[in-house]
Length: 387
Ligand SMILES: Cc1ncc(COP(=O)(O)O)c(C=O)c1O
Image 1 (spheres, rainbow, N blue to C red):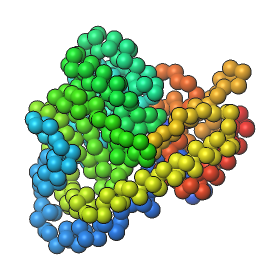
Image 2: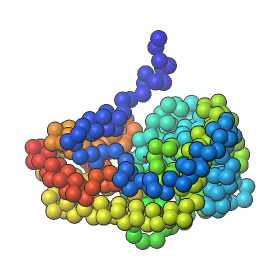
Image 3: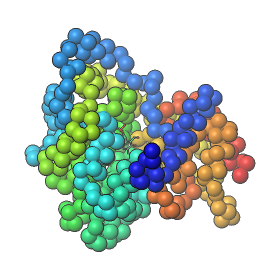
Image 4: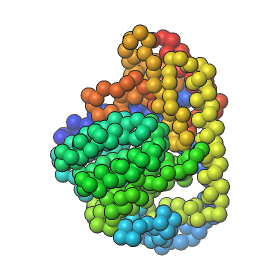
């Protein structure tokens, strides 16, 4: 039996392959986007787990939109705009898939930043959307290029990660947020504001969400993977009621609903008086890991690399300085790094196929300990030296 055409055309996932290799015992992985399991809020789960184990009704089939007490909590906690509603999905990844399946016809245009979150690329490719990218800098997405794209008229959705972008760690400044919201309104483009890292800010003040300037024109994806537990696979997606209802229809056909006992568990966790402390500690621990990584990069790789400091999230985008205009093959470099027992991701995999990129690596700093991060960079130096 042959799989459907769209599956055969799907490119192999470099990340999936490298993650497989990165699980070998002696490999230090800076490749995935994994949170630190040793900092999961296990103690806060005890009481809700106990309660859930005595509540058979939670193990019954439930409503597709989600466990109502969790929906109510999210609506209040995230202060949903009037006219907006939400649903619980099996991770933000499912939220993206539901939007694509409910709103995109083959050939519809989707704009995204380059480089871009791979999981989003995969979803929009599977939906047979036509993908367009705009460059990203410290000032946010290239607004001139974005407006030119929107003005052509075929762009239905703009997918963006304005806070601690994956893979670059960048944060859009306020002016870019306001300008993008205006463009989405002017050209009637739906914004997907994907915000899994927004609450992982280690320094400085949070900026308003882009969608707060165009609430009638945006979906917001809030994942609980990075601030709570990735394995429970839960996220909250909100937007205008008539942008959410079609997602519920597709979700019903897809999996009826996300597991209710896990939604009840998440609610217990979020309502715990200790959850805020957990978040504060998590931010401190990740900030310490980031310091360890950036310090080791400066110490061991100095003039071979450059990177923008990040104020949160889980990733650092490491640009590689070319010597005498000699091209750097980042795929080969990542292979050599793996031979030296450190896993990193070459920057080019974060671009749609065929798009060139400046040589760069994405480094994750949330998963390995500060000590491991230092060793990882010492190993990476060996891979650089063998170029
Ligand atoms: C930008 C971005 N969006 C969405 C996701 C998926 O998150 P979830 O675990 O909620 O499916 C990730 C995961 O790494 C991500 O980096």
